[in-house]
Each structure stands twice: as C-alpha cells, then as structure tokens.
Length: 69
Image (cartoon, rainbow, N blue to C red; front, side, top):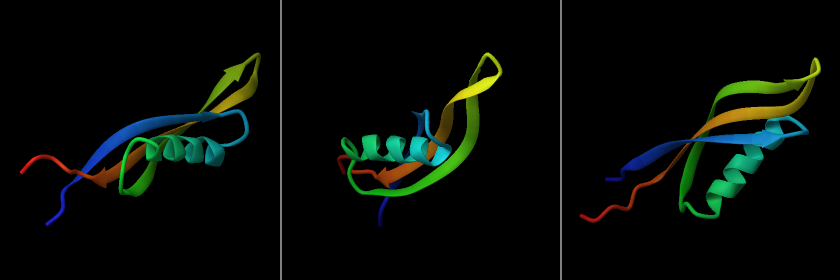
C-alpha cells in the first residue's frame, strides 16, 4: 500500500502559464522524490499599467509519502 502527500506550489513566469508550471514542478523535483501528479488549479496574471507582466500558476503536486512506520 502507498500513501501520497499533496502540496500546493505557485510558479511564476514572464513567458507563459506553461513555463510557470514547468518551473514549479522542476524546482519541486529538486527536493521531493517520486513526484506523481501535477494538477493545475488556478491561473492568474500580474498586471502593471494595464499590461500582463507575469503569469502565475497554482499547482497541486503529489509525491510518495515516506513516513516512519
């Protein structure tokens, strides 16, 4: 039997929502093992002077929980 933990991340990018999501998952993979699923839960934009300047993505990431038995 396996147990998975889910955490929420926020990725940002000046390029696109896809790039923001990739940055969030790539960064998480550096400290979390066995990432399983990334679910995009929210997209938004940072706006300055009427123009979008940054894309933001909320991502729920699941990974295998390895607590002490």
